[in-house]
Amino acid sequence: MDAKPIRCAIVTGSNKGLGLEICRQLSVTGITVVMTARDEKRGLEALEKLKESVGDDVVHDIIFHRLDVADPSTIPPLVDFIKAKFGKLDILINNAGILGSNVDWEYMKDVVGKQGWTEDKSNVMATSHTYEMTEECLQVNYYGTKNMIKAFVPLLQLSHSPRILNVSSSMGRLQNLPNEWARGVLKDVDKLTEERIDEVVKEFLKDYKDETMEAKGWPKILASYILSKAALNAYSRLVAKEFPDILVNCACPCFVKTNLNANSGAISVEEGAESLVRVALLSDGISGAFFYKAIVSSFE
Image (cartoon, rainbow, N blue to C red; front, side):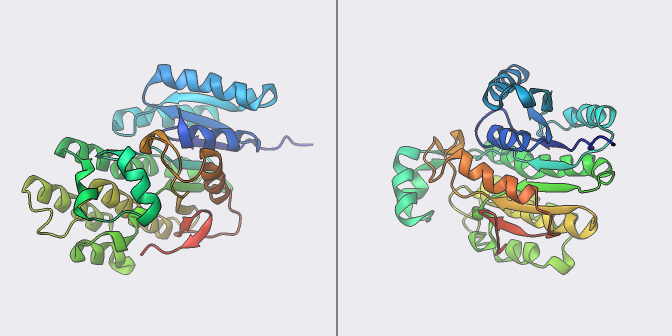
């Protein structure tokens, strides 16, 4: 009897929190997991922690490889590693992400729980950001994910069941993007192109530099995070359309307790990861969709 072919997955930003738990849950299904982190020491420490949590029977199915999605030069070595070791890639989970703002979570966690994110004066005052933070957020959340997809599509196309899951956020829904022009561009799927998405991102950064954010109708709270996820959602739809042989989806696991929000979220990392893994392992052919807690939802 022929041996069952090995299925392999990459999870970006997986040395802690949601990414680490995604790796754990994937590994116990028998999938070989390549966990990644920009800091090799922390990544290897997380690998040992993960091996201990899943037990001896699957330790050989978890591998660490350094990756910094904000640094494009770290992507080709990972491509070469996957190609040499597995010959193809089955699942790419783009989990790496940053907030792009400083947030007073002690104040905000009560507000979010009661009324959600609103743009009243007190909530705006509970956040702060710089141009450098804003640019980095877009580099990681949007451009970094885009670079990973472009690099791994050829290896995904060699799989019998290729999957791309982009970890997104309900904050990236278009209703949270007040700028009518940007919202219109990202909403028009028929005319959507990579260049048009990039144009929205570049215009946003230009308006930040010009200090015309408020006048142009960009979000007042977590603006770079909202835009990065809205752009990511749009790009996910574009990739799904361009590569119908690959299931490409994005998903929000809900407000998960992680370091990103000083553990002020509403659900555990275990629950959040479970819904993401469920979407990543879908077998019903859904592609180009946005999921909220593993249920198909709206981009808008």
